[in-house]
Amino acid sequence: MASVLTRIIGGLLTSKAIAIFIGAEGLALIGNLQNFVNAFQTVATGGFYKGVVKLVSEIKEDTLKLSKTLSTAYYIGFILTVLVSFFCYFKSEWINDIIFPTYNDYAYVIRIFAIVLPFYALNMFSFSIMNGFSKYKILIIINIIGQILSVSIALLLIYQNKIDGALISVVIAESLIFLITLVGIINRRSLVSYIRVANVDTSYLKKLGPYALMALFTAVLLPLVYLAIRSHIIDNIGYKEAGFWEAMTRVSKYYLMLVSSLIVFYLLPRFSEITDVREFKKEVISFYKTVLPILFVGLVLIYILRDYIILLIFSEEFSVIEELFLWQLMGDFVKVLSIVIAYQFLAKKMFWHYVLTEAFLIVMIYISSIYFIDMYEGVKGAVVAHLVSYSMYYAIILFIFGSSVFNLDKGVLED
Image 1 (cartoon, helix red, strand yellow):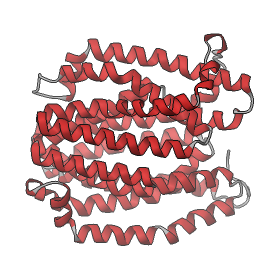
Image 2: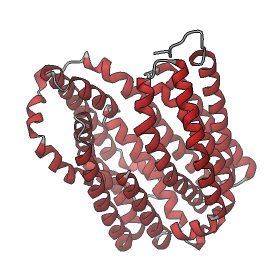
Image 3: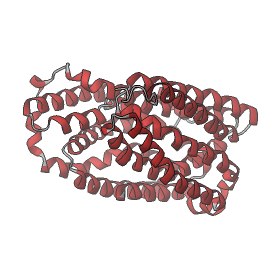
Image 4: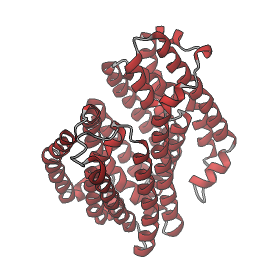
């Protein structure tokens, strides 16, 4: 929880600096770059993070299996990272034209991203090993120190170089954490001997595959869809309006971090243990009864205090996003309702359930956003689409679990 709070505080400070020194137009550019970076970082690491954590935790006492897992993940990840880095470096001008419409000055930022990407990949690989070995204390310390370092450099770059500094901070922030992670690697340097080319075993890709595909599906496609939606706003309404939408989604992201961390650290491990349908229902209902009322009250307070929140996080320029809060908050409430149940897909590795429902959500987010943005002729359409998309997603989740998982005659959950 400490690392989550550090990330939230860091995000708030960065958002305030962007609002003061750059403004809404710059925030739109930063949002597009952030989506691109998130998508390509996941591609570069192959989406192996959760798979490596899971496998390492299960086989850490078996040196041969551990060596094969680490060697396969490392070398496959290395190849992917090199390919992505070369692509981004040599196609930087083309990428610039896509993510920065009408701006032609930031190809160098993409090239910086290509150069530092291997350090991000190494950092995530190291994190997955330490997580698999349950080195939670050092992970939390690395996260906190890394976040403080990243935010400090981001604030300095924004202050000195405005939009250029902000864009550079986006592409180097996660890679900087590797400097801190080196300490953790030194503490576990004996693991380096496990990573050998001779122990690369492609059969282990089958074990890592489902985790990788699930991660790649959401972590790549969803940011690219948001990039496409923001670009649509830029092309049809303007940069400032795209920046206002980015501001609203940032506010949403900050308070949802707390809910997401609770789900990941409590519900996901609990769902992995449950095999009985009645226990699953009991756990979901318990979460709904205990957490959702608190979340609802919190969202109501956020709505009541929205004027003050806007001034606290951003500036008076962003006061127009006040009208977006109601739709965004309602959409987020439905989102939490749905992901609490949908996490069962991950816990039980229900691969096709996960892929099909996520595909439905991603398609609905894009189609409904374009439709409502054009209908309302403004960014209000994007937050209306947020509510509509997650309401339909929740309906699909209830349909799937109502017809298969909640069948009391089966007595056990699908696996």
